[in-house]
Image 1: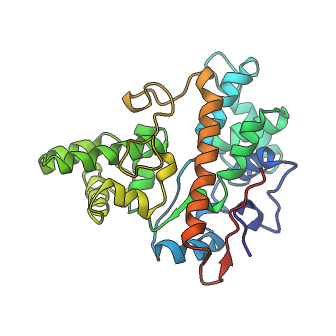
Image 2: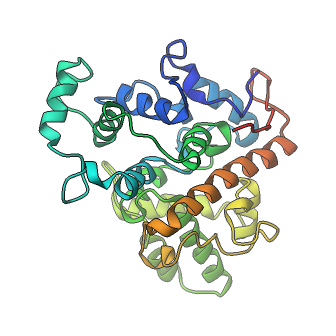
Image 3: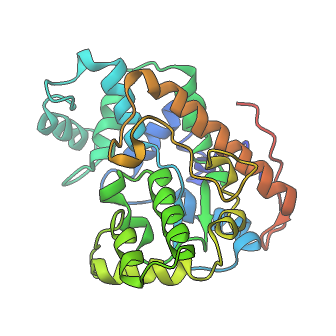
Length: 300
């Protein structure tokens, strides 16, 4: 039985990633995957089994709200005294060498893992909002299975800083322009606003894959309701409403909240992920070939 109150981090190596709290567990996860991905929550067998009953089989998986950019921004806002003048981990070569000395990597360490190692070494304490956020991002209601096409996950990374709300806004714009009868060239130009090429797939091909995927749905509302995304909108009761403007300028290129906007943004995302879980459970109380029972009861 899988409860959505449980982090999927527990499925790796007999709960080896679980720390004293979800903030520490998140750092453990990034350190464990420092050199190569040993375990990926959203594509592990348990997540796929649970989500297949909702969305069907698919080759590609995705995490809706990826935490790394928010974690890094939090440290820059609330622990800036420990960073260098550019807001980065000080003396990264020395940090990577220490990670090698600790047998965490052999040759190189990812950017995520360097930050995670720095956070753990300094035992950085965080607001409760970040602890709750660190938990929900690795629960089932933050995963999508079969809701992504080839190229979408990596293709949206560069221009959105992996911010799903920004990608959702461009899809909202795409559907509304389509309803207005704009040309296909203009529709593709809209998608190019948040998509880039990826290894082995050009930008034009990424756009074609995403457009083909979006064409499976007659409207933005149908797309939203298919994937239970209502709680990421400005009006959750109106599936055709614009995605939530989480902070001023988010859809005009300002991809990071101000310090004053940060914690309220984290709180919104945490609640939206939880609410999405409630919607999913209402329709699919039992799902997956293992008949996992989803108890969307959050006690964060």
